[in-house]
Image (tube, rainbow, N blue to C red; front, side):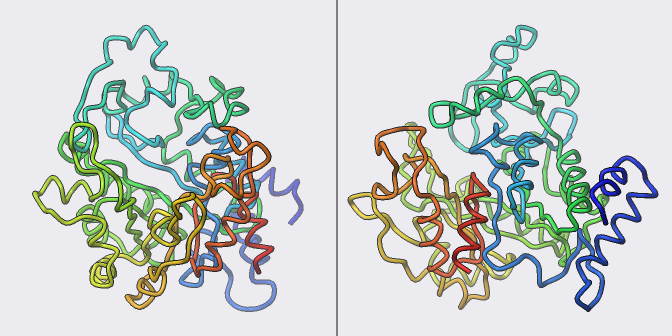
Length: 390
């Protein structure tokens, strides 16, 4: 199919259907059954899958349609929207429900009175929150770069993009999948699910219902559902056969300034359990995760710990332990800027907050450790690193 037909098809329902069929045929041109671009089956994703963390967030403000599109253009297999809810129950893509640092809300005088302090997962947070805005109100705001000191070039895009809904993200993925004749996955994360349930805006059924209504079907779907909590993943498992991922935060996280634990799933904390992420990364903990999840995705230093000199140490037994439990392994997050890299991989000014180092070298180390996929803020670097490794 030529590019002109694909471009034309995006605005014409009949041609869209034709494009989907032809794209499936193209994918199966070497034999076998046609590939459903939304529901490609158990063989998807490819080994060492590249997931665009919040989109190509090293190149565009995170969780914008521009960031997701750039990620797709740069070769990501999957894009990752974090999900929170608006007051009227719409799922939108933001890293946190506190939108102070990722939108222009603090300068929007009409919303000045909505600044407040809330207890989010045991930690007091002051700012503006999605659950206090309708979608229509949220759409009047504009996104901005969250970490401009690390990504000053991204700040040039401040004010250009709005806050996308989950449906807008799904529509973009479907359109680009057809246009490229390629399966592009979606990896939504439910953010603060215990908190959202406590205020009458539970995320789980909303998410599954929207995915199903958009044509994603169970275990064959090009979808991973993820969370740092456990109870909501078990609830998601009761609602769908889609692939589920248990995220693992750094077990060595110190307590918050007010003493609230940050090294355990918040649903554990809320229920009074004393278990932590350290319990979940043991062989027994991984076997427990395998009862409801397909993949475990730990903070990267659980797989390769840093040394006292902030270099990569030896790989731990985590990958082997997870495989023994029947789980695949992803990891997060591999970022290109110097502060996020081991010291010897920083370039050329190791003290620079924004200069980019040898991110491909770090990715290569994790590929050698045996992971099945990874999150990266720069999918072009991730794609090149996987190609070089293979």
